[in-house]
Length: 118
Length: 217
Image (cartoon, rainbow over all chains, first blue to last red; front, side, top):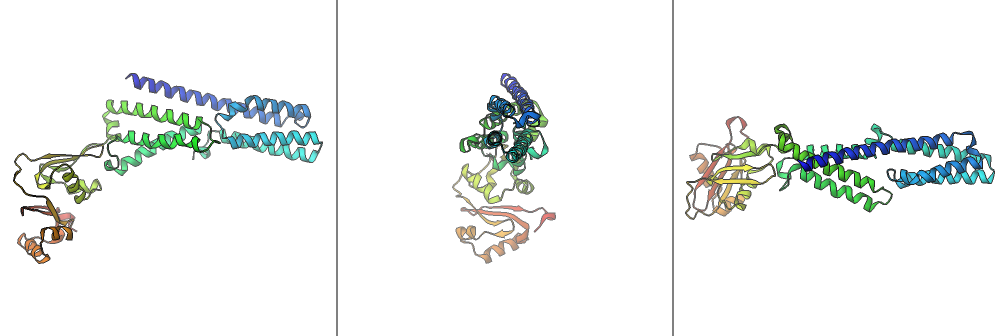
């Protein structure tokens, strides 16, 4: 009986933990998406703030998302930073679009959907 | 990660269902849910070892989930007859009061030669000596001999006809010709297709099992 109760408690903790983590990831990625659509994202300060937010939350995201998806987002952020520093509007626009795409893929990968389950 | 949790539960239910449909004999010495747990845990745990792009949580969470489900299932099965029937099933009486149940053998996907082999492994040379043979939920065969069996030296039983077909190996072991077998069938006023099992031991004692009339081959 004791083992059964412990198993139920552990299972509830797991469910609670991963549900909480799911909402944490969703909120983090949504914030990144909002930052990527802000007016200041094409400025040096704007991209640094989004990148700083990303660095603060990268480890947390890494716990539940596979490394290749994390690396893709990081790569696009660095590309955007490089494009803004180079002063090329064309490269900047392309980098922003790719970053938004990677963030939407990240949000999709973490979402609770039939597509992800099956 | 929520998806990984849901996948784990789905795969667990899937494996339990598959093993249950596959029958008792796949299980060996483990209980059904224990076997599923053992299969799952090794596969799950190996995933992040072989692929460092996979977060460790993708192994930790499913492993803990599987173990918790296994513990909860094991407890629930002892308390609920309904769940016990679903997970463990019931023992199957293959031989009951000395009579071989052909339909039960068919249901278990077990051939009569396998049954004879299992009986021999338990030290019983002749199916005719068995009072009860029960295939347990864990796939093991329990055998209870008849009290009145003759203890004289009778050797082992050789299958001559199995499921309506002549077993040449048995004929050669007993040095019986085809003609002699046909003559014996004629004496018994039966045909080959009506015989599910016909064995003869080294002392010449026969054991006949006929098909029910409606399932004749």
